[in-house]
Every structure is written in C-alpha cells, then in structure tokens.
Length: 346
Image (cartoon, rainbow, N blue to C red; front, side, top):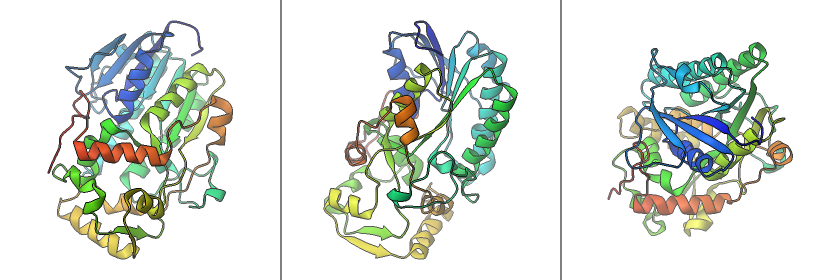
C-alpha cells in the first residue's frame, strides 16, 4: 500500500490492546478510506470514524474471512488469545490455525500488504545486555516450553513459506516488546494476574519489597507507539520483513525499584518459579511458569532497522509507559470493547 488516498485496511483483533490503538489511528488518518474491524465480539459503544465491524472468530473453521478481505489494500493481523494456558490446543486453534486462515484469505483476495504482529517472544534465548542487543537476524525459534513463544515462532516459519509462495504480497512482521497502555490495564490484569487480583496492590506503599530475579530484564513499549509503526509500514512501499520495536530504558528491578521507591530483594529463580508453578497448577494464577521461563531468557532488541527504514522511534519511554499502566491498574482503567472493559477489584 502506498501513501495515496483511498487506503482500505482490515484489522483482525481490532478490539484488543493493540487493535484499539491501530483502529483509532487509522480512523483518524485522512488517507484511509475505510477500516474493517474484525473481532469475535464487536463493540456496542465504540464507533470510530470510517470503521465497520465484522463479528468473525478466526479460530472457527467456517470463518468467512475471504469476504472481509475483499477490496482491502492491507490486512493488519493482530488477533491473539493468551488464555487458557492450561489448554494449549485451544490457543493453537486461534493463534496458529486462525492466523493461517487470515494469511490465506488475504492471499485469495490479492491484498497487496500483510502486516503480522509477531513478538519478542518469537526470538531464541539471547543476551540481556543493551550493548549486545539483537537485530532482526537473531534466530526465531522461541522458547519451546512456552505456548506463546512456540506459537509466535511457528508463525514465523509459516510466513517464510507464505512469502515464497506469494511474492506479490509485501509482508511485514512487527516484533514488539511487551505492550502496555492505561486502557489495557484491566485486560492484562485478568490475563496474567487473574480476574480477582486487586489492581490497587500496584500502589508502591503496599509492596514490602520488589523481587530481584536474575535474568528478569525486559523491554516495554507503549501500545500507541506500536500502532504508529504499523501505519508507517503501510505508508512505506519498500518496507518488508521484520522490525524490532522497543522503548528505552530496559526494565529491571533497579528501574522498578526507583519508580516505586521500594527496596529490592534478590530471589533465586527456582524459588520464584516454584511459587508461580504452584499458583498456576492450582488455577490461582493464569500466567504459566513456562512463560516465566521464557521471559528470563528473552534477548534485548536493537531497533535500528525500524529507525532507519520506517522513520519510527518510540515517543514514550519505558518508564512513562509503566507509570501510565500502573495508574490504570490502580483505577481499573479500560475501554469500550469486550476484551478491554475496565473493572476495579479491591
């Protein structure tokens, strides 16, 4: 898709964390003619300009994605299910088989641009030192024990084949760091912490100490910054392949301790993992110990390619992103879509 007027964009997963930011950005763009928001449950109270909603579950074998893709100049594929972590066959149905259905529908409709939301989770274990941050050539075999990483890595192989078979389609793979915004706080609390975890526990004065675990050093990014990267990729006819997306500085116990004014206490990996595994096994915690293992091994990413080829840079620092997200947790922030509904617990 070029920068000419009349762009027509399909967005799957349009009501989630990333989707709401992408739809909002596209609907305000004068170069976009229409947006088709695809979601399992379409919103009742949110009606962005130039946006029409289509209730489609990509996990369903009978999903009519071909009709949705007709006439589009780009598909931005964001649909993803994090839960249930105790049933990886179900997430595979949505995340892998559903993604393949979207890719095939875009090819049948001859959509010229496909943007896929990959992730830092697709990367193989790597260095945690900012001076050794990895570029897009780093292997994407994921951490095989974690369903999320396994699925993201598998789709990288699917897209390798797709690009070979559909050379007429410009394929862009976004590999963002962990994505946060104020509106996503309630959704992410439910996904990773559980439906009944009190958001007000994010208040610094209630934290007796901050766990400092070796390897727990990651990158964060504001969801709106990731959405801008998607729009820039649509507007850049030569942009193809993978792009790392992350904000500075890297997030570790030192940064969080300074933000929260809380002392850090070194904890062994085995002890922390055992606690998470016990809570997950009892269905008290949705986030699995396998994902914890993966997070400890994810590399830090170098974003030079996105800077140079897309003209993209994060507008929010990681510190600002986390401050906004923590405020959202405390106040039960959300949005007018089913996945993003706000709810204050506690």
